[in-house]
Image (tube, rainbow, N blue to C red):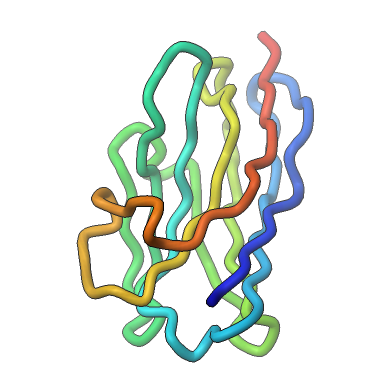
Length: 124
């Protein structure tokens, strides 16, 4: 089992920045990839950024590319999401997830490991 815990959400004005953290514990050696997802009110949860644990490759959806940066502190088993130039439409609950499976991060299910989420609110 792997446990992941997000932190770092909050309220910020449009154009501001936040950094989210996701600390992984437990059987972290089994992690193949981790990703950040978000769910806005009334919308489905969506994948926004991913990190391949072995290669260090990163992936972003177009809506956050150039504004968000995903990174990892290997020693701390912690994944980060630096969010710059935030927009009101970025308002959502942000989730971190880890998977031991070699799958597309957009297909993660309840079989994978999810955090409890952290609220990000961007005011206009």
